[in-house]
Amino acid sequence: MPTRERPLSPHLQVYKLHTKIAPVLSISHRITGMLMFVIGTLFVVYWLGAAAYGPESFASAQAVFGSPLGYLVLFGWTVVLMYHLCNGIRHLVWDAGHQVSIAGVRLTGMVMLAAVAALTALIWIVGLAVAL
Amino acid sequence: MSSGKSPTMRSALGVARGRGSAKTGAADHWFAERIGGIALVPLALWFVFGAVIGNAGVDHATFQAWMAQPLNATLMILFIVAAFHHGALGAIVVQEDYIHAPAVKHVTVLLTKLFAIAGGLFCTICVLTLAFGG
Image (cartoon, rainbow over the protein chains, first blue to last red):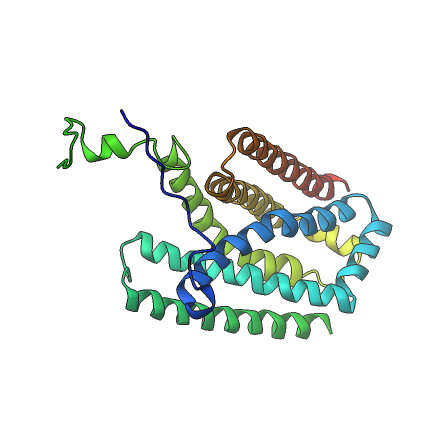
């Protein structure tokens, strides 16, 4: 039996990513997922670990996250998490067999981006109201 | 069903099985990733609003008392397990797609699993230490 070259997985170089929103939204799902798994988990490890090791380490962790740089990182983390969460729901809609069309991809993409912006804004309005 | 020079008795599904970048077990992996993803929608929103914003700037005693509430400890451990499991499943798919050298891929997939198990266990122990530490 002749062996053939197998098709390559989601290819990053052959598409004009800067002119099309669908592939950008698609690869962003993987990028945000990897960011959370590789870096985001470390923030959770640091926060819970600092708490488990006692009052001094927890106070310094709370100070790190409460600093201007900490807020900037947490804001970026909020966008990344909300993007992956909302786009994950978008994937579940497709998995259920809905909106599987070019028009559906564009419509759900716009709805997803609006939801990310709305949820991020809501989280920071509530968060700042509680923290300040 | 089949066309071309080499007719076959095998079904299209039989031909396609095992030829994706995951080789085997893709359907179970796919399903488990979605079960975790669905669970993480409410759990991640609880983590952001309940755990992080609810404990913004609090001192150690307040945080420990919060974690000592059984519902909070339960939800935190559920979030930790679901997040590390879902994250590992997703990261493994990405590696299967983009790492083409089998030896390298097997090592990074193994490291991914070890990272998820160690990270998830450490976070869980931290929650239990806080909840039962007194």
